[in-house]
Length: 356
Ligand code: AMP
Image (cartoon, rainbow, N blue to C red):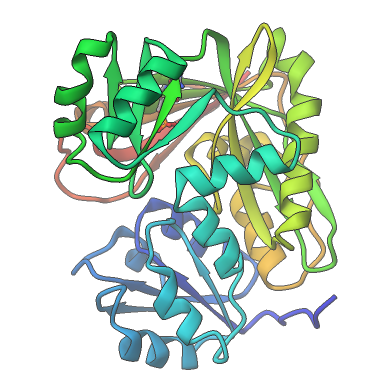
């Protein structure tokens, strides 16, 4: 157990999106100040933080200056290059650690790691060329999904392959990047396991939400997930806990699963707080954001019990956010807007959590 970081200290957050914004709000409640490092001019996390440093993620010298002025460092999205973070590792503790970050940046390593820890992803093959892709399709069959190994999010960097004849067009569409071919999982529901692990190894898991996607983007999370999710969440939680322990992980870790007739199928992990855990702000005794801050500051973790029988989180994507007034008129609906400016299609502008 490391010495707890006393309130009044400064937390550095790499990334300036809504996750950083909600982390900053949770940190402020506990008496910490947050500094945001992000390349955008006006990242939405900077609205609620003490300082914003505008610099590129690869700028090691700017990153070093940034880290010298914080007491602990974390990140709010996983596409931050790992090398500059490794180079400044002596300046401040980084949670979750770089190994966890690197693992989650590569779909292939992530799946191999999960298999090594007793988990079961969809059948998959590494693909580095069109010839590999053709062999992989012959092995796995169709339908299948080709996903880039790196930099995929919200369904981006993915192509569905319905028959072997589509190999060439899929390879072109994905830009010929190192990829993974995955078999298409026949699942009943999707769910996620959100866990927080502290510096002492203490682990807390929230009840597993059911997640519904539209166009590859999370649309709704409903907690607690029922039916097949209730049956499979314990096994999925054990896997996530085992992975967190093996990585000596500190912070919130999210693992996404497909609930299938054959058991929970691991989809992917995120080494951070996650959209499918936004409901925990009002729907759990301690939110994912607060427990992440508690974990990285070496504090005891908070209780993760639900605060209502049923909780629904709806993402406000693009123009959905224009409806903000109607949400305010609903009883027990909690509106969160991220102040991101232009409501472009597909952009996460806010969310609403309803307690029932
Ligand atoms: P991902 O970015 O990998 O989480 O994929 C986004 C969404 O696409 C998932 O939440 C699923 O709804 C769907 N999807 C991804 N991979 C598969 C798969 N192997 N089988 C079936 N559906 C999938």
